[in-house]
Length: 414
Image (cartoon, rainbow, N blue to C red; front, side, top):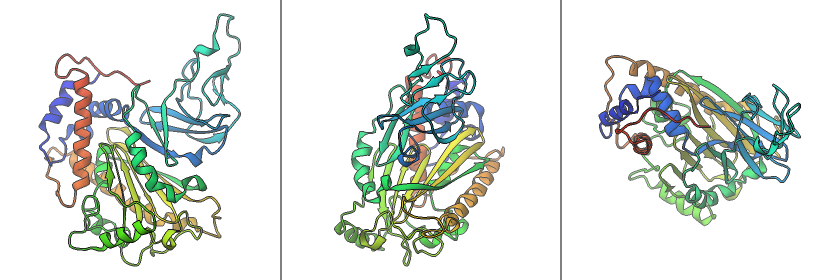
């Protein structure tokens, strides 16, 4: 049982513009709180529609301790469910993807339609009603071909995000793409440290020499270049080609198309396209990168030749699973149109470097000498935005629980 008043006191102790108190980075109570108050209520980016491309397709993933299924039913409709059998709760599908006529629980062989209805349960009495034992649904939305799920009974509004972002992403033609590669990385650090690191490039010049070749590491917030007018000139050229630049943003999301460094058309080691068959061929593919980010756990980059998605899922107070996914054009042939190592090299290096940074950060945060320090308003504007959002979302949850009145513990999701 979590002491919500203790969480409230930690939030009260945070100074504006500073990192969080130690207990919010390494405490079991804080982890349990974050799963319920943050991950249990947010829209979470879990993958792409092309990962469940046809009727019978399914994708199983895990959100903290909670297994979730995304399916496409015989009518082509997307669905999502808690991945727990309605008999005795066994996990129906292990994490991964597949295609099948029905979802079969491996324990006692209860069978479910892809739309969630219980289709078969052997040796149950005549009084048993299959209609009362369908899978428990989860909210799911596709935004421009990107899949988001929300475990809350009443999810946050997603309409403004869809309206603003879908036209920006549409020219990248995600429905004509395929998943080229997926990697997972275990980071021995709190998920908030992973995301703070992912929300700033203050560390990039010294820690990411490869990424810094293509990425404008000196820009701040929504790629503000100061007296450098390259982004302004880029925006004019790109708008003429019919692309939206932005920025657009809401409480929990943001997106902008930005110029890459001189000589770079893609986020690769040498700046050239990693895939010959482009996903977007406007301007010959010289369209910079469309970056979007969602709180609490992810970001993505769409260049002309590929899409890279980064997702951080907490599994413990000091452990996070980082998943990266790469999309390429559906007709691109590995070994002919792209080399997998070259496609993934830059972000694989970057993610490994970030893992080391996060684990080192966690070790220092665990020290009795840790004191929350100030962010750079210029270099860490988006890290500040993330931490401010986290504190506001946590406060909103506590307010709903009547803290500090008489909160008794956490309601579990599912």
